[in-house]
Length: 497
Ligand code: 4AD
Ligand code: MG
Image 1: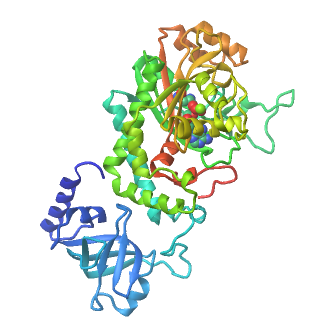
Image 2 (image 1 turned 90 degrees about the vertical axis):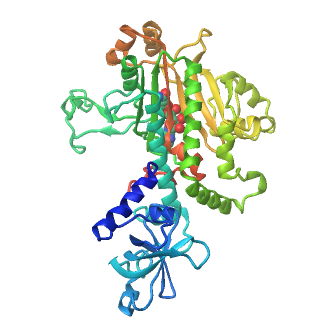
Image 3 (image 1 turned 30 degrees about the vertical axis):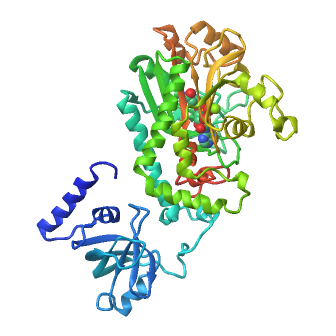
């Protein structure tokens, strides 16, 4: 899709002309080629069928459809009945400059075949505006909508760009385990993985479940993060990253939380917090830039969608136009302040003074809520913000402790409209300090012997962060609900499809 577009296309054309047999070409390639006069074969799904003559087809390769014009000599009454919205078709014909407005080229069909019919009485997707909520109920078909097609293509581009960014920088991709025996990340409630008979589990003498009889001989869960294993790799390979699914059984039914989401977690040896912030900022800007350079048609479509949706909102609640917003983030340095400074700004803010925050700011130690994060980003700094040096009580055990004894070398990156998009830190490299903190928190130091070993043998300063992939997708696509940027969302009470 992104590489050697023209050579691949040229090759396809050459191939079919040489062998005298037409090969199917993706609609995007046909449109990009402008190869007027060529015979083409396209396959896809009918989006519209007008006047028993104009078949508008999309195959998912582009937001743009192609129109085929078919005369009675090509489609008889029998066939016309079968060409309905959602049916799959193969069309052969000559590519010509389009007569109508809205498209540059169209196909004068010489042959039309219906591959699979779609009963118009039953097909749920009609060519009209469906609500996003309705589309979630037919997640198996929503790939066929413009919105979801665009989101899906941008999502793919971002996956590719993640790997490209880190590969260019000499990072090594690590697959960390999905089933894990460690539960002390502290990032959230975990889903248990077990093959024990739920109705009749083996019990220990004290009546508790005997997990030594379970599949792995111990209690296991789905991972909440690949970080701890990532650290093991970084302390040998220097720079690594993971990009995998993570699972959190929190019952938070919000527009920004999923129970199953994808996270990118780089981990770097010899990096201190500032290096970590620099990398995260460069990384985010790289991804946004990549989207602008490679997905502009989809972004333009998504931008229009967002503006339509926001028409009904009062002026001051509308967000910046999507592409303008992406460029704005690329062009501006992220603000960098400490948690303590943020609390001061928030305590002196208008909403705090007017008691407008749902969760009041109670000085140092207050866990920031998304309303606070969004105030800092959208109202105060008006650009992304990196908050550092949080109170140790509200952050994970592994974060490097500051001299003040109160704060840790944490960093959260906050984005407009999203709140927290990245969470990370410098890690505590001192065995003694790490052990003491774990004991304070009643964490099983002995069970974590493998993690402690990295501090025991050749420990070094190191840092890392996690980027929530769907939070990034929310920002780039301008969609308002995280359920609409992942193909099959997993949220409380929802795991169909
Ligand atoms: O801040 P979190 O919990 O950090 C970690 O898991 C660290 N182990 C990362 C690291 O340092 N390697 O999660 C990281 C990011 C958040 O900033 C957010 O973008 C996203 O993951 N995230 C979620 N996204 C969707 N649904 C959820 N329930 C999420 N929880 C976190
Ligand atoms: Mg976090």
